[in-house]
Amino acid sequence: MSDEHRGPELVRDDALTAALRAIYQKPTGEAYWAGLERRINDRIDEAETWWTVPDGWTKVGLAAAAAVLLVAGGLYARAQARLDRTLAYEAIVEVEGLESALAQREPLSQEQATLRKLTGHQ
Amino acid sequence: MERVTSAVLQVGKAGAQQAAGTSRWIVTDRPANERELVLAAQRGRREAFSELVRMHERRAYAVARAIVANHEDAEDAVQDAFLHAYRALERFLPDQAFGAWLHRIVANAALDITRRRKVRDTDELPETVASPFRDPAEGDELRSRLTAALNTLSERQRAVIVLHDVEGFKHSEIGKILNIPEGTARSDLHYARTHLRGVLGDIRSEL
Image (cartoon, rainbow over the protein chains, first blue to last red):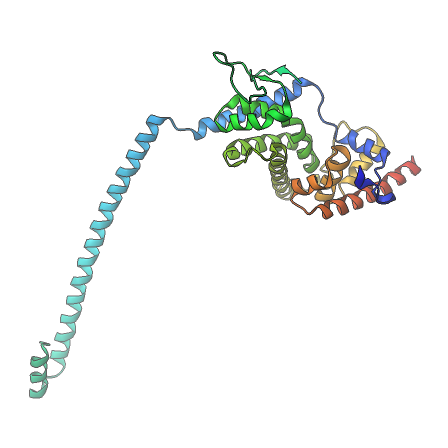
């Protein structure tokens, strides 16, 4: 190889290469490779079976998902409406409570009463 | 090179075409056929992909074996890699070299197994870390000591020297497979050879 002609350290050592080849020897025999090929193909078949959904089931799955989305959407809308009503009620109760507390604390002067009447705050 | 495969594939000059009215496919010219096989596999022909498996499994095993610690892990890496390749096949551009693409996937699968093995060994079997290359069939002193010396190299250095000196890959190919610059592959090879040659010299002088 051309990249081997760069100095003694980069020259392939035949003894080392032979020893490495002995350690990293590939399995021999066609039967082994045929077996590996079969296992690879079986693995792909298995994965395909797992991933592939029959056409009929795809439609059923899509319909079920749409139904679930509709129900979830309806439930969310109802919950949101209930929450809005609760918040509105609590806002009214809080304002009324505050006003009655103020009213009990001290009577309004004539000027304050007139001002409240003009600004619309009862 | 002409042969009829067990997957009954026929691929001629006109490409990976199934003979009219039959289910027989014949492989006549591997380099030209590979692209056709890839195209056929991309069109969903499982037997075309099986032929690609048959064509590339040995080389794929060699790439995996250069990276992982033992034969069993290499087998697992090859199986994982072909499954990944099958799933990613539609993204592969047929004008590229299928082998180079596959080898990169194999290397990733092998590195993934090596990482998982490291975590598992650290958690469960600390004693196996010291000698992941242990092989019951190893008989002679030279082999077992060289095996131990290989274990003192980094994973990348070990993979580089095996891919280059045992499997005959070029530096540029190794760079692509391991996702490292070609210069790094070159310097890793230099270091690994120098280191192992030193170990081998010591063993020879002792034996």
